Amino acid sequence: MAGEQAAFWVVWNPSGWNPTVRHETFTAADQEARRLAAANPRHSFFVLRAVSVSTLRDPVDTTLLLVPDDGLPF
Image 1 (cartoon, one colour):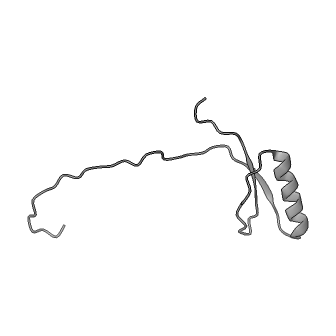
Image 2 (image 1 turned 135 degrees about the horizontal axis):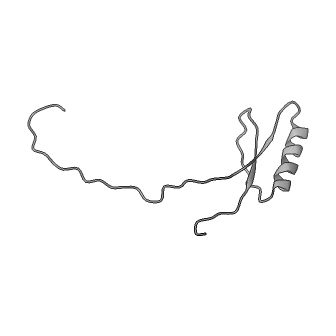
């Protein structure tokens, strides 16, 4: 199907460490989560799979009709 992308996984920490690496396999992401957990005791690292993507391709341009200035401020 056109527009399909390959699945990927990221490792996320709820303490505010945003994902920085896109893992092509679950195994790679799981290994990274375990490595990070070992290096950062008492922190949790979640393996998340991307299941959907939304993209706005083209902006919509709208031309407004010009009306004569009637002196009203609105």
